[in-house]
Image 1 (spheres, rainbow, N blue to C red):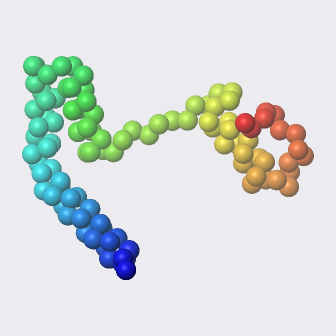
Image 2 (image 1 turned 60 degrees about the vertical axis):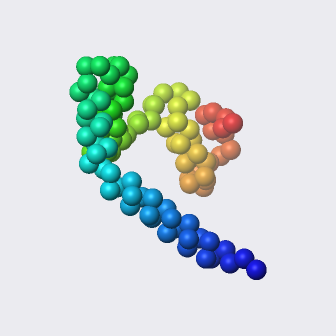
Image 3 (image 1 turned 180 degrees about the vertical axis):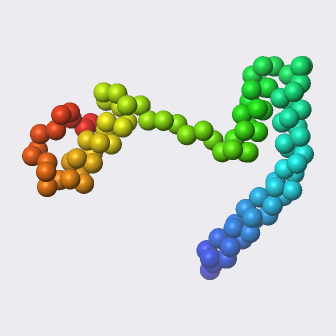
Length: 99
């Protein structure tokens, strides 16, 4: 009989070990990225990629703004809110169809 709980614990331990091993190479990895970023021999794409990786790790990924135009994600969110969250004020006719 298999013991799924034991397998999950083993997987979790393995993931923890992999993360720990990867983190032990952080200084070297950052040094390599800096080396690529500063290298005149690296392609511009490689230099930008290395620079972005360094910035992402140091400052986090940049927030992606929602578009604020007709049929944008922000407008869709507002329409859903009007229909679901404020359903007591919804008369069945919205300004646009949700597909």
